[in-house]
Image 1 (tube, helix red, strand yellow):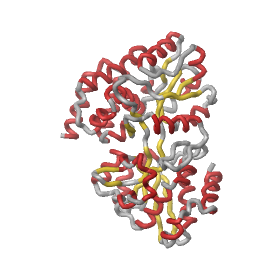
Image 2: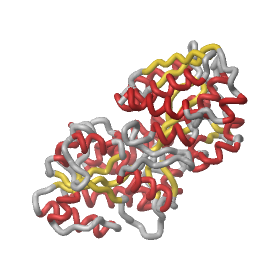
Image 3: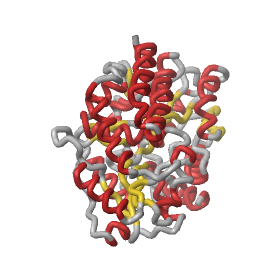
Image 4: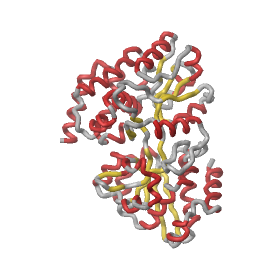
Length: 421
């Protein structure tokens, strides 16, 4: 995959596609070193990142690009130190509130001037997610949909249709349970998957604006509207909709339940499709639907996490760093790196092309045409980091011990008051 990807990039460069007029005329004098630290450590993302670095280096003969790739989970604890001591020029991170600690600490550079360039109009859909305190602090290079991936063959076997509302969801679930099949697989060992369920049930119950008010600490966790979210969630829990002992599985370890037909669906991000296919599910068995309506008075809001590049405030080669951001956000590069044989996700640039993959096409259509409520970045990105950590512990506990809800909400409310007041 690495050689294929680099060939595609090299072909673009050779054809003068990525070397736009801006690159060729205004920025040909880049020199020195460009130091990048990336957390794209899994095989396919690593190949993408290595291809980006190599081809940007080739475009600028007087510039040396130095790329360091670190483990994705380890980077979450290393990034602050990396930005503080001998900082690189460019780093990977995430959009929205996950930027806040590094913006507040003065470790990310304000790049609002780059966003004022005409080419960045094509990234307008994510400008809000890159904005804090009225300024922009990074650029997006990929995003992906969440939704319900399901076994179409099992649905067909029992005459089930994709549900569009909560009543249909519950009815489908009961039919599956009556036939010895769990409605959903999930692995909550590392907590964040429970956050996805909360995002969807809360936004479908109370709307995007309320969900984001809660994320900003403006609403008590003991609010009756939050309780209604958990009441809706508990309907599935009390039915036995989820696989047993999910708290002992990672998200990957929960996949075999769906692959083997013991569970019919998975609420997950599109990155899981490759693992489902690798597990043996063909596209004739696998399909996707948008999380159904709960409250018809609120519009669809969708989780679409956005991954990003940022310039360190202590960068020593700012010109090269900004040019690299222009490069990775260009339409052609975003088309290439998000293709099915690369990241397998969605390009942010509106002028990019979507790879010929049914799940990418469905996700792009959903996010473009049926997400009028708003785009969420995901529980552990929209909420304050400490609030998200305590919150996801509570969400997992609720899924295992729903009778503990009052204690859980009181604990979350105490945390909210300590953090935000």
